[in-house]
Length: 370
Ligand SMILES: *Cc1c(COP(=O)(O)O)cnc(C)c1O
Image (cartoon, rainbow, N blue to C red; front, side, top):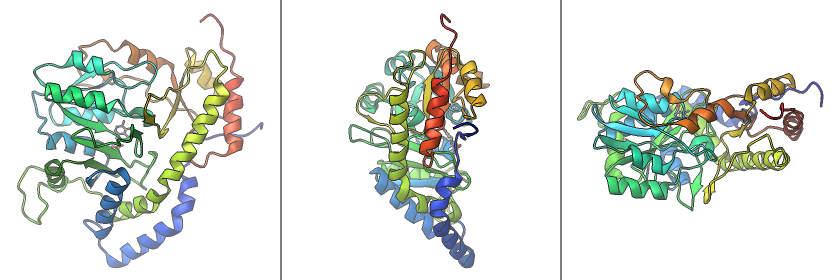
């Protein structure tokens, strides 16, 4: 196994499966010359809502836009506060800042890395307009509890589901216990476009209508602009890619699941390594397989020397973003940022490569007593 190098992700492997279908569709699109607001977006939206079991799916430009459009549709505005976990991708906080509201960071659970419901309850104020639970790494925040809290406190819930398409919790999926759920089709996500794309899904018909208007300069009828909107469209070329990939998503998620099980079984005896924990009732879709090690940087160097590429999601908490205020302790999130490491995880990762990753991890020798 010497000399093998394992990439963190290799998108070309899933592309091989759908290349012919996509090129055929793209060729038709070029002949027809209809690039925006075409039939493929409508088909994708209905296939997506069917796949996810929600009433409405609305294609948008990217995952960050999806969050911003959902916040606007819920009328989150300057003066409002929005509660979110301290450990997410920057987009979650920036969407809040971009609508003029204030992101309020709260701490997360050390085992699941997910936002803590009691920390949300503590952070609620008269100005709290919304909460954004981030379904980090591919598993969902406890939506039953959060839904209850939201109802009692009269707070909107907008799910950041960028990393968890296809995940479920006790038979309920995303968009069922919230105002809306936001999806990213960034190429590296579980369902990735060949560029930028995203979607919002909801069971609320009014919210769906507002989001359709906002993504298209404030109107769904040409030259009628009833509200303040912007341009955030999902074009036909990307819709064709996503439609070609969607039928494979279940299979690809199954592959991720197998890799995660194999990793976890192989690392069980390593007392210096903390493994990912799946919360009760969750079907995890393993966007990322994230371990914790108190000597993370040495561990990452060791893996790099063995040809195993790893990434840190994320090396900083969101407190480093200008405009974000820190009012509550986020000790767990800060500690996680020091300890976490994401191992190679993608459909198409071969058995030999998985074996190499496992071997590389097992041969790390932590300096005891640290
Ligand atoms: C990827 C991601 C986003 C943003 O999606 P883009 O399509 O890149 O704009 C938002 N939140 C989380 C948690 C993400 O992982």
